[in-house]
Amino acid sequence: MNQASPIVATTRRDALRDELLATVDLLKRRRAAEIDEVDIADYVALHWLEWHGGSLRLTTTGENVCKHLASLLSRTAPRPAT
Image 1 (cartoon, helix red, strand yellow):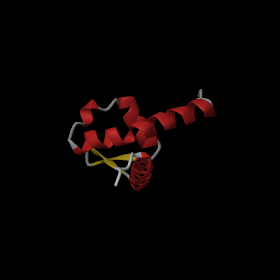
Image 2 (cartoon, helix red, strand yellow; image 1 turned 180 degrees about the horizontal axis):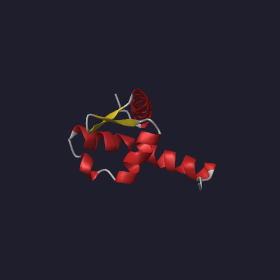
Image 3 (cartoon, helix red, strand yellow; image 1 turned 90 degrees about the vertical axis):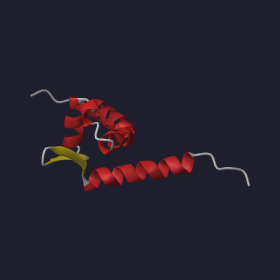
Image 4 (cartoon, rainbow, N blue to C red; image 1 turned 90 degrees about the horizontal axis):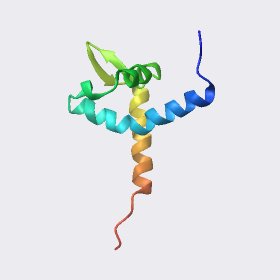
């Protein structure tokens, strides 16, 4: 079995993390068909998404990653001048 190098795996995980909020948005809008099957398999392997009764949903780990990403975005968003 040929395994990906740790650098490739880390890069792939980073790419998936960067797209996670957009993926969750697609799930909320019931547009899971627009998510690449390879991405879904990788999200499931990372335990960020899981199959539940034929549909995808966030796991607790996935929710925590989303919360972390949202907090990072809120820190970097420009604040209005007062």
